Image (cartoon, rainbow, N blue to C red):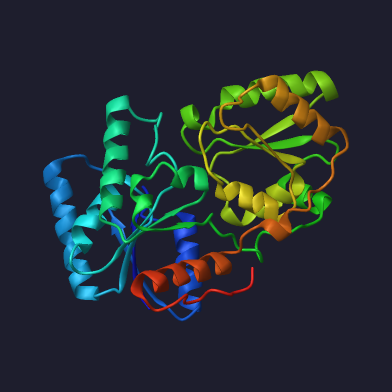
Length: 317
């Protein structure tokens, strides 16, 4: 199958890590995948139209069987405009692209959500990491849909010896260590709630060290952080099933998180304290979704849309 991924390009020119992983997995499964870098760094109608023109020219030249916009907002809307009449469109939504994005003003966030919903109206299929998020997509009522979290590399993210991981990272063997992701928008990750929960946990069990994942660590060190820590703390205001949680599951690292609408620092502190009193590993690796399995399910979804049957379904986790 020939697939065109459309994804935003980061400041360094790189694409979202999970997009790159799925490109490789689909290619390894025998599919032809092209990756188009959509530049959403400027906000003007003229520039958007220029980008759509360039993307439509790429669709005409490459002639993919499916165009897959890997995020919503302007990227998905541009893909919808470019693919119209040329190839079926699939759109993946991440979370804030169909909801309130506290990183931006209320107006800008609403415009982004509207662009996502409009793009979905022209899609043959939509992909979301959770059923709750899928419920926010209006077009789900009449187009094909797939609930699919991001897959992880289970060879890279696997259980390892805690002492060796801490020695590699320069972390003390005797510390209670909690990981926290602060690489995104603070208004979204809610570090204040994390700090309050840590303070409550410290009153219960003593000193706890918070290790921040701010995006500066080399990617190859992330599995060592997972294996060296005692738990991962997630306090995002609205997030489906973050890749970081999948990676923690793959390493059997316990995860403490705040449920939607239940953002109590005392309850989080109690949960952290319970995990930290007698640190042990989880048994969640078997529930982590491998990138190969995620790619196989995507291929099967494309096949259903194209009337080719469930291509790729049945690959092992």
